[in-house]
Image (cartoon, rainbow, N blue to C red; front, side, top):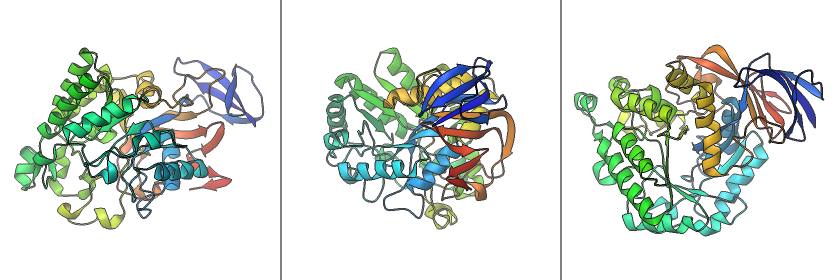
Length: 431
């Protein structure tokens, strides 16, 4: 199979043609005319985005999302690789379950789906899951997380870090001290006091981050901090890196843009774990992402059916969908504010996450010989978020009705076009 992406604008501003043969970039130049032509119309061509934090819900909660619908949402968002968290039913804590998720992703074919394995059996925090079996399975799992729950037992966390070190694996921690967050509903602060909701204090996140940084240093293993949300957490990660500790961290798009003030109307669409924080935290997160203290953006795409979000606040599920809005939200928070460039964004949302996870065919420079996992973006466009037009099976977006910058036009997975002019391709064109 051969085609040419014509008139593509690269990050350096040059406009080129890019020919793709059998899933690999075969030539870059001008005046190329190999196979079918896809006119980029001088829009920006970048490596496909990579997400290390996605909830696909399958198996077990297909009413929220499936691997196929989540993959379609990813393709619409410009992602060519996503990492499926383990909090499914059954939990992805065995080789059999992670291989099922991996196979479903391959069958869907809209993006590469890499399963994340659970750290503990059943996410119960009592004993280690089958880490070695998952690592040696067809899914080749290298990232392990109990996300949604914290590995709060210090000895168990140490043992997990020691175990994955044997195959260069990573423990991705949901930093939440459970004793400090019993029945918590939102960020602990001025707004929670006014609303009478139980607060989720920043120290509950920071205490676990501090402990795990020290454990990672002691063991000499790889630690990844999921969805960092506090200014203090940024300081802790910065401290760890200054000491040469092998720690990486992510921030979500929604924590770069939204604050706990939005909870004032009790709309459960803004209920998320970890919670939306203060403006001070948002600014610290932006600066941390800009200066590289925070390595990557992770969507924490968390789909829920209408009945789990369209209810009273205290009964509502935690979480927001984010794959289809992630790029635009980061552009609004980081590029429009001149904190980062497009090259920085590509580093944080493609190159670095692929490097952390070891996804060798993703996050590559656009050059001859690399896999054609690519995304074309109209950087001058603006669009309005319409929940009814999301590819995700769930519609719990906090950005409904918001005008966002930059629009994904085309996505290519291993040389196959899976998104054309913003429409998912599946033999024919499907919305």
